[in-house]
Amino acid sequence: MVVLGIDIGGTMTKTALISQNEVSFKKRFPTPSDKEQFQRLLSQMIRDYQEIQSFHKIAFSVPGSVDQSGTVRFGGAVPYLDQLQLQSFLELENFEVFVENDAKAATSCEMKYGNLKGIQQGAAIILGTGVGMGICINGQLYKGTHMQAGEISFMIRDRQITGQDSFVGMGLSAVWLIKQLAELLKVDNEGEQVFAALKDSENESAKALFHDYCKQVAFLCFNVQTLLDVEKIVIGGGISQQEYLVQTIQQAYRELFTVAPIIKKTLQPMTIEAAKFQADANLIGAAIKENEDEK
Image (cartoon, rainbow, N blue to C red; front, side, top):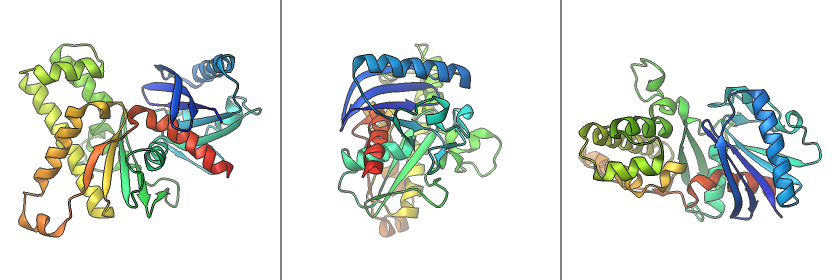
C-alpha cells in the first residue's frame, strides 16, 4: 500500500511516496509562511503526486501535539497549524488522513525499521528547527497524558531563563547552528557545505560553537538517561547524517562519566548513535502511524 507522506517542518517541508520503509519521488520546499499559502501549495502538491501514482491515504508529520481527532494543538515552529484539522482544512474528504507529531513519527520509524528495533527502553532526539523527542517504554511508543510526552523544546537548559535561548528548542536548534556556522565560515547556509568547511577549518570560533552545541546535546542525552534509564538514544533530523556531529556528541557524553567517580559507579552508559533513516524517519514513521491505526 502506497501512502503519500508529508513532513511539515519549521523551515522545510518534505514529501514522498512511502511503501513500508521505501521512500520514492521525494520533494523538498520551504514551508509556507502563512496558512493560505500553505493550503494552496499542499493542495497542488497532492494533485501532482496523484499524477505520478494513485493513492488513497495521506500521512502527515507535524510539529506540536496531535489529539485523537487529528487536530494539531500548538504548531511549534509552524504556529498557523494550531487548531488545524488537516483533513477538513485541505479538503481531503476522499482520502484517509493520519497525523502524527514529527518526533513521535521518527521514533516509530526507528522502532519498526531502524536503530531502535528490538529496544525495549529507548528514545529518539530529533534536531531540526526546534528539538523533539520520542520515547519508547517497554517496546511501545509513549505519548503521555496529553499527547505531549517528549516536548523537550520546552525543557529549561539555563536556569537563569534570560530569554528563549534558555530553552532547549531554541538553544539547540540545528537550523540555528548551521546558520551561525555558515556565517563564521563564510560559506552558504547549507549543511553539507558547512560541515565540509568545518572539518578543515582553523576558525576557533566556529569550532568552539560546534563543540559547545554537541556538549549541550550530550547533556540532554545524559539527563534523559537519568530519568528513563534507556538502553539507547538515536539522534535524528537532517543534521544526523553528519558523522562528525554524532561522534562529537558521543565523545562529550563519555566525558561526563569522568566528572565524578559516583557517576561511573552508579550509571550504566547507554548507546548514542545516528537514526538509521535520518531525515526520512518522519515521513516513514507517519506512514507507520497510518498502518497501525488501520489495524
